[in-house]
Length: 100
Image 1 (tube, rainbow, N blue to C red):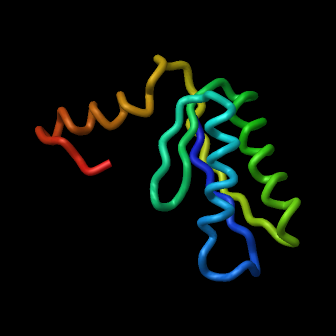
Image 2 (cartoon, one colour; image 1 turned 135 degrees about the horizontal axis):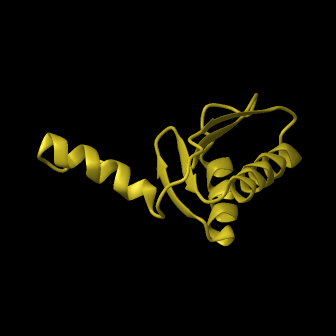
């Protein structure tokens, strides 16, 4: 599982267009994912996830002179759908649903 954020540098304050372009690529890829206000979390095997992030980075770089990509990786053997299970585990401990 990895969370990534791709930021075009020098393209103004609103980057929604670039985010949308990347999310089209993520959608087409078929890996399980969730978006949040600060990035996208993707679940899959290491090589698939890294290839997807590289594809998003390269697509943004094609239309921008400078791109910053931040990646946070959680690499371990686990069950599928860890995206939901990690949140559900914390919700059980807290005893309530959280905003996601």
